[in-house]
Length: 210
Image (cartoon, rainbow, N blue to C red; front, side, top):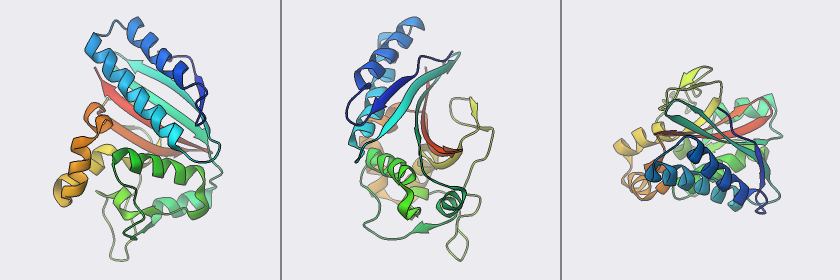
């Protein structure tokens, strides 16, 4: 099932409608009170990130589900071309102050960098968990078409960032990043989050198993 598409802006247009749409989906699927609240909280976190973007931003929000798995989508157009995308996926910077703090801060920053790719590189902290060559370039930085996330649903998204890979890396290397995950509502409720590029759009997908 795919819900209605709600057009949202970082100025607040459509945000309340997106939450109501989630409530309607939860009601239609006869979710428990707890599961409904979790789905609504994830939507509110996504909308909060959207509203925190700078400039004039707009996107489409919708929900898809298969059996007991849900996907929350936020999709926006980007001016990124093929050359910019290749650079983004193949390189990173190492500046200590480049990476935003907090899980939602990182998610928002990556989304914004792809929307406005004047500097189409990612701080290395964002690609944590992927292998680097001796030259510092990412090895196999994308998941590729048909990748299955924690929800078990396949999707064609060319992924730039994954919560689960970030979680795996944080558990090994960084107490600060692990603490961020422990304190994050979205990281504790979502089974997976991906940010990626599909054609001329950037998309965030939150996966939730009920």
